[in-house]
Amino acid sequence: MEKLEAALAKAREMRRAALGAPEVVREKVTPAGAPSIDAWTSLPEVTLTPGKALRHRITALAGNKDATPYDMLRSRTIRLMKEKGWTRLAITSPGAACGKTTVALNLALSLSRQKDLKVMLIDLDLRRPSLHRAFGHLPGRSMHEVLDGSAAFEDVAVRMGDNLVLAMNSTAASHPAELLQSVGTREVLDVIERRWQPDIMLFDMSPMLATDDNVGFLANVDCALLIAAAESTTLSNIDLCEKELAQLTNVLGVVLNKCRYPDDSVGYSYGGYT
Ligand SMILES: Nc1ncnc2c1ncn2[C@@H]1O[C@H](COP(=O)(O)OP(=O)(O)O)[C@@H](O)[C@H]1O
Ligand SMILES: [Mg+2]
Image (tube, rainbow, N blue to C red):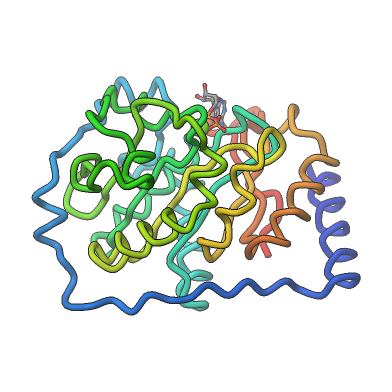
């Protein structure tokens, strides 16, 4: 672990020295009017039963010690994002099954335990959408239909409590790369942000190495977290993806998931935090 962290830090340092720190600027949407909390509470509510949470490794639901790693990630993420005035965070990984959806949902739940934060989690892994599985909730319409203009956000969005909104997919999109890179997607996200005024929008994305889905889309976010799976993601793939991600947006850090510690059942750690 320490070797991996040191190697990552070194690679990052060398890259910075060679390229200079990338700065991605996204046009900011000026919120119009007061926060529409009524709109949030009028959405249908979904629940996460303790049994489902356990099965899907959702440990951040209650604020007990199992939530600690996600609470730490939450605090660092929100501090950095507030400092920079950022609201949109993408969660991606080099390959499939590194734990993007697991981390995204846990992070969203941890953030939403701060009742003064309005949090939105949007499933944009449009090839293998999976956020709905943890809830056993199959939305009538999918988030990809909101992006292509054929469904309203209200017909897809659900809430947990008063300050967490989730937008899921029940089907895969037919042309995810084109859709995610489209002007229409950018405009729809701007309208959602303007109308619903979340403090933070989390995007559960597809993996970076398998497709080009994220390439055009990442201009729509302020920053990203890269989730790597200890023992299955190679160091060279972490480095390659971190490098590519850094060309597209601001990299908040690499989360090393699925670590096996004898006394740590959460199996989760930071692989560097810039
Ligand atoms: N820290 C972890 N330790 C063990 N298994 C995990 C961990 N995080 C996620 N998983 C499991 O790995 C699988 C893939 O996780 P998922 O979040 O769906 O990945 P992705 O969204 O990157 O495809 C799931 O079965 C999930 O329960
Ligand atoms: Mg996923």
